[in-house]
Picture 1 (tube, rainbow, N blue to C red):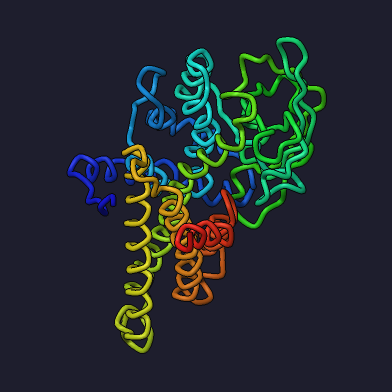
Picture 2 (spheres, one colour):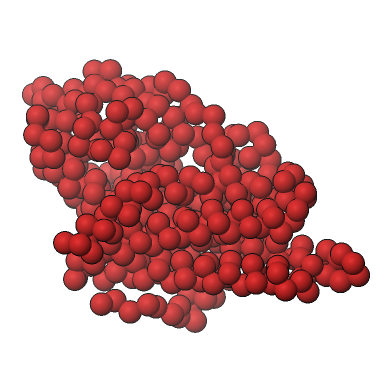
Length: 381
């Protein structure tokens, strides 16, 4: 089995640089982004300037070729400052994973450099109103028409809806439940319409919406993989992206705990800092242990991806990492609001935002109930 990893000195230095960047450039924008529920182009431009938009992609397409462990470090550090900004970093990679792993060389060469430079952004269009956890029940259809496909359908819970100019769309090409799904890379200006943007509890700086495709014509050259390979591509992709959602969750939890620790040291009651209270010390210790356990699980799953999953352990390890880390984020952020008492319940401190942001990590890219089903199936055979 893949061994739990320890970061190299180079990775630790990289983490320190990204952490300072997140504190200097991203954290100051976070509260206003949340308050106004608007996409922060300033944050995205900061990611571009730091060359983080290119980090996740192979060098031959203009990327930096970073390992998934390195990508998890970035996701964590960005999320500790602003969960919405960490999604800017993660969502295009999610959209491009099917292209990277299943797409033609021509498709990669055409689109990946655009994503790496920040010229384009991508969204992953899998879920539908009646096909969320049960992906194979999707109703969106793609019908062949000469050298093109005509796609009709509605996709929901689309991160970056209206911002992205590229959408990885999964559509039914035959009646077979699993083998009848095919993936396509669709340019927004071919007719992708944003029907609705959701009003959400958290990650308010990252738009989530419903998109509609009405007779959208897509060239066969933009088909991702073989006809009928879409379900396989979707599941393969989620196995490789879930660990980075775990990293996002770890970052949210760590960011909240960092704020709480400063407060506990500075706030005095009955003549002593709150940090001297044993009851609170034990809560802090539990938070720290959960975060470190989650971080180790995330790094281990990411290392499996980097190795190419030679022993077929990734599906369970990724599910465990995402599930445990997101449950940890929710528990830790709730505790951090409690540490700050009444102040924690106000927008004067970021912990209430972090608590709201943490909740989505238990839901998207497969609810934690689905993750537990994946884990149980692997354990029980």
